[in-house]
Amino acid sequence: MAGKRLGSIHDVEGDVAVPAYDPAAYGNGIVHLGVGAFHRAHQAVYTDEAIGQKGGNWRIIGVSLRATDIADALNPQNGFYTVLERDASGTRGRLIGSISRIIAAARDRHASLAALADPDVRVVTLTVTEKAYGIDRTAMQVDLDHPAVARDLAAPHTPTGVLGLLTQSLRLRRQAGAPPYTVLCCDNLPDNGALLRAGVFDFARRIDPGLADWIGAQVAFPSCMVDRITPASTDATLADARRLTGCVDLAAVETEPFSQWVIEDLFTAGRPAWESAGALFVSDVKPYEAMKLRMLNGAHSMLAYAGFLSSCKYVRDVMAHPGLRALVERHLQAAASTLPVLQGIDFNVYAHDLINRFANPAIGHETYQIAMDGTEKLPQRILSPAIEAMREGQDIRPFAFAVACWMRYCLGRTDSGETYALRDPREAEIRACLESASTADAITARLHNLPDLFDQRLVSSNLWCSGVSERLETMLRSGIAAAISTETSACK
Image (cartoon, rainbow, N blue to C red; front, side, top):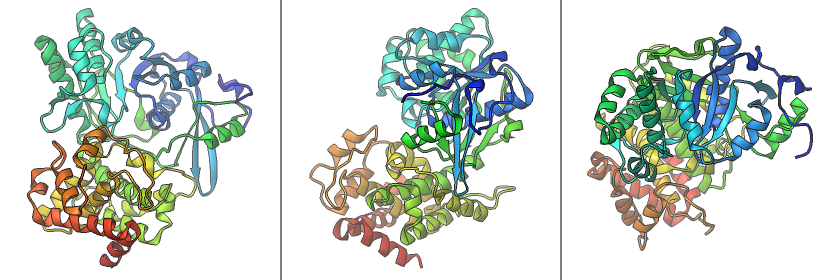
């Protein structure tokens, strides 16, 4: 893409908001692992606003654990990039200056460790997706079969994975007499702070019990809940960023106007004034986290599988389909019914707002993108509320339908015979277990018996298993459109 490359505030010639501070005047205080589109549209924006309003040396050093493209895009731009907010009224641009540089860890492992060990860094944030951690959520220990975990346990001083990098950098800090940083997980995982703490502690215990004890006593792992719909950037994203800024911006991202960040107030080494940017600090994140995981993320997963199989490319296309929209509304109501009362939150209002966000005609959020990593997402998004609904004698049909859609998706082919990759960390295992399984009952039984996925309370429930199998049978026999029509009729 020819043209002047974005590199500073002064390069901007268009109508975009720019940082209310000189980024070069502020130092680094945060290392972020996983500099994808979501981080650039969410935490980096909050940090940009916080520095602009309250100051502080809180700029971000980003670490890309595997890919190098984001480093190649952002570093020549001195960390600057454009966030586009899209809705029915149009597109607005904002230049973000909170990221100072990106380390491509695949090229320089030492630089990643050096940044994490720097005592000026007081907070480490992460958005690496659920599958990257290598933590067994049931045992609350490391997953010894996870490739990064196995590799880093064998060579703990030259780590490549999340747990290894955190553990080794904390070891270096302890060795140097430097205080630890606070670790803030920003991925969609239930009780994400406690989960990551357990993973790091167990990893450290296996290589240095004394270090593990120090981490357990000294390092804070607050939980948080994040929310902002951020589709993958496209050529249209880059074109609109160029139109608005007058510059070539290869790191531009697009998102919706809505943004939410609820954070457990547990920081031992200071933090940015994120509350000045709208973040909410609370003593217990769990209720907010459950609301988001079960309602927004749960409905997202259901509509992703049903929508993708129905040839709906984007979430907005799903919401334009009367039957699918009705099933999204039903799912939101069912998920809300599994939640305890949350002070200051009206679940009906929240559900109404989600419907409007999903239907945003300006956001091209692909159902295929949302459908990836299903085995990592199902337990907290669909299966946990299903167990709660079953325990309380509530309607389990919405959750059974969602799981049936996932199982139909796991077959890797549409009704017309078009094939696709599942893009799931257990894809090979799923395909192997489904070999020669041709009936709904067989597919249901085999997928329910995948290790460490379905809770035994679901596996042993005839009500649940038959509910999933019956819906899957309709999909296999009559097609996804007929299954949606049948399900829609049943909820009237």
